[in-house]
Length: 252
Image (cartoon, rainbow, N blue to C red; front, top):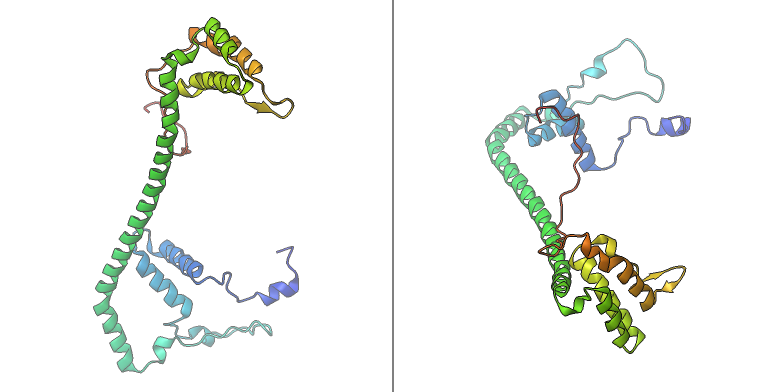
């Protein structure tokens, strides 16, 4: 309020805090829920709150309270609600119609609520299925490299790596071959320490000799200390991390 001028404060007096009908209705429901308890139905709470907000059943009794005169510009009018402006016959028919139709509208509300819940569940299922399909597509590559580890293409020893590298005639063939042997360990076996970037900002694209040195010095010797899995690693979608309140008891 310190950042708002006096003119702006006066201009916003007795005005709604939000121009959104749905936001106002939601606020009325929450307000009535505090008064009626958490087990009350949302459709009933919304009806009561909306009725009070519109002053449908107002008696205008506040206009009869005297004792002080409000300042000029702050007068508040308390009109009689629209219900009490009706003739007695319309009041009776309106109440009777509400009683007759209440069970029907409760049922319609429950059906709409279930439809909304079903749509929400389906939307979450579609998101999960999409993530699962992406994980399955990503799983094809590790399967391929995992099989290559148990074949002659793996370059299982340093001697084989050097001899096979010398037989390749072009730099592009050497580069592709060394990259594949690194990916066999990194993607096929899940050895994260075998990873090496293909390029850097300082040196640009790494040559086949640089990657071969990494393969000989770091990657191939990892077979002596790392476990070779029976299956390639699976990158399945996992649930989000949930924060728990309080501390874990000794019983847990």
